[in-house]
Length: 72
Image (cartoon, rainbow, N blue to C red; front, top):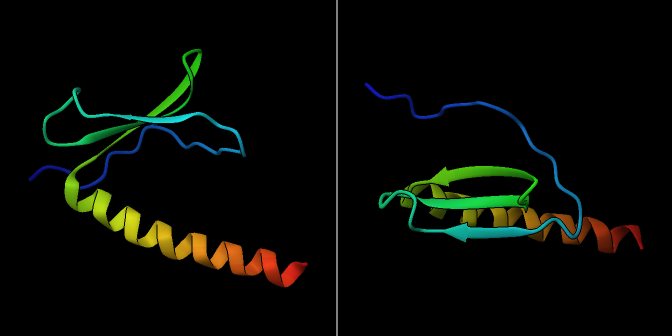
């Protein structure tokens, strides 16, 4: 049985971090590349996981924006 998650490193970003995606590395997943060519972090997501990341990311962004408004 293949692993559902393989961990090799962690990453933290700040505003302005370049983000791009590529679909040509693996036909079964999307590659997201964070950072510039000298310092990159890649994450490959299958369609099901990507959909869940979008759903949860939308929720997290909504909560972060609410926190920001409350602090003002």
